[in-house]
Length: 318
Ligand code: GNU
Image (cartoon, rainbow, N blue to C red):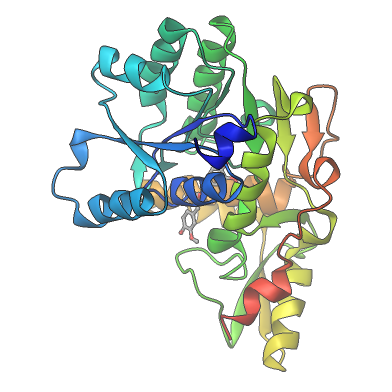
């Protein structure tokens, strides 16, 4: 009998366990003492990094479950073994875009009938707030809402995680597009750079996510990750970097109109990116609403989590 079983903790299945988010969810689930299952899809074939990552999860105590999203019976058998299913399928255009594959998973969970909590692949802005989002990037939110509707129509208990801006995509680069490393000389501000944004270390996203799965306060709710010290304007983020390198960056600013116009001629992934950056840095879509009845805030639910501050996060990039 494992530690997780002994303590009555739920058994977790991660779908998308080798991805950017999924690998962190697997780690956090093991660390928090859950019996952890990772879906092993035949489709990974000769992708040797993914195969070896699955084997390393096994070495750390996870169980691999073979199933294909295109084989309903195999998926039903997989979800029947657990209490909680967490899906971290990618919806990022320059990686892969598979969000609607989750409808197959919802079908399997419905058939199996035993799942006590399902967390679909969300982990960004709250799609329920993005009904007005710009093309072509709105597909991300539209598809997440289609998945939500399927979950709720099937009466599957859920938690939606709104993780806001992953530090890797939005803080490590001081919010500059097309790079993942911080600039050392010049930086582009979105308008005056004074809109409040929420930055999250991806490992903390996983820690908070696993905390919610056995928590009745998170049942059928959206849990927003908004730890107060990580609610920063672009200027405040840049200031932290400047302090770390002991030097000021040369700042220029791009207006809303010019930023939106820059979409023209870009490839699809960057057009999607411009739309998302626009909603975050001009509109303030991460912080321009209060968390209502259907929501909870993670750092209030779990004050014991010592979340990573962005100066600490940027330190290693010097
Ligand atoms: C943004 C991107 C970064 C794109 C979300 C092009 C969904 C969300 C904050 O598609 O994950 O350079 O919430 O050149 O709910 C992409 C995703 C970021 C935009 C990354 C996204 C954020 C999607 C780029 C770039 C750094």
